[in-house]
Amino acid sequence: MLRLRRLSEGRERLLTDLQPVDADGNDQLEPAEFDRLLNSVGQPRLDDRERRHLFGQEGRGLSWGGFIDRLLLT
Image 1: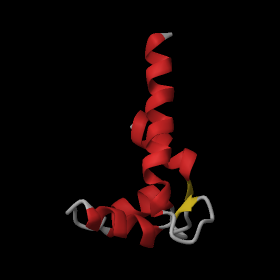
Image 2 (image 1 turned 90 degrees about the horizontal axis):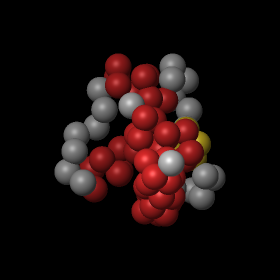
Image 3 (image 1 turned 90 degrees about the vertical axis):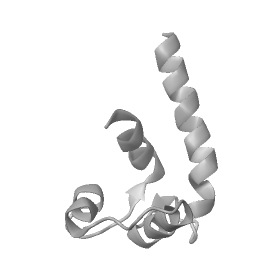
Image 4 (image 1 turned 60 degrees about the vertical axis):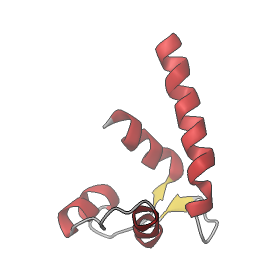
């Protein structure tokens, strides 16, 4: 139970910290927003394969919850 509580708290903290990245306020992380996030922490952009894996073939945005879940569970 403690582990689940910590995961939940970590998820909420990440959502709070990452929310400013959502430049258009649509509650989704879009590829261009993710590029800006990576750049802000000195990381290179995703290559095409990584981008498709994260955002799918169409390159659509991810819900913030879906993105956080991928971060915490992958």
